[in-house]
Image (cartoon, rainbow, N blue to C red):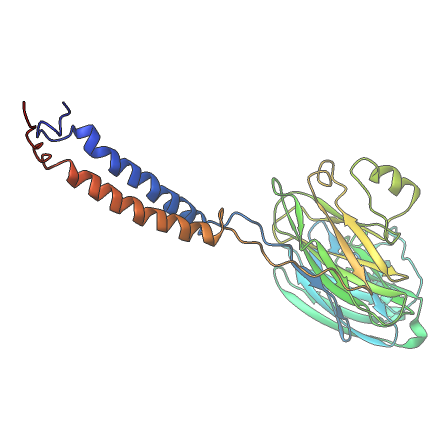
Length: 346
């Protein structure tokens, strides 16, 4: 005869079993519901768009190395260029732009000889910037300056002789296009964004990319010279030995360090760019520059839930059924079974 037939309550384990089943059903709802709130899928990379550089503004950092960063700039003919001069050092520096085209001043000149040259020939700009200060210089480059180069130096004694000079290249193309790229240091080595787009109606076009380091690891911004060529970590070194890159600049290894990559693209196409520091390209540090071609649309971020919505509703329904059954089973064990009818003839 069973326990229930004798009128004794069911065992504790037997009464608890339905509630264990209900808890299991509850888990089928709770787990996917919690998972739906977790961000587990990375959103597709953003796209950096270039903008025509009419009224071109170029940032040049002055350092105590001493040096200019960047040490050259491309300016379209028949345009005005504003140079934002930022002194990052502890010494005064000058931005002094020569009026004599295509002349490279000898680093063997003494400070007095350098002063004498500019006293005799004048300057297109001559701005002195105090430590940790900034200044500006606006220069007009007429169409007659096309394809010419002008040197800029610091006139502070012995800074030019130590390497503080650079060049402005006047191009014969239309206005350049400026875009901005950020780099991220190790361990998450990547360009962000890793898709750039330049829209232009004429070619060749000058592209000016401002690269900013958000970490403290050195990087390069190196652009493949041929369109629609995809390099790999195993072949890019040999490729660049045979083909000079469109641009190859070293990004300062300091947080917020910037450098301009100025280069000319001759035709419509997709151009790959990458970092040549060993191991960085292999870790995923490369991107694509779309010139005159619309980049592919950024796909919508997929659902981050682990299960579909219909599963959630189904689990909720099962939970309700399980709770009802558990309650019935639990209470049914608390009452004795009715006595059996007496037999006949016994």
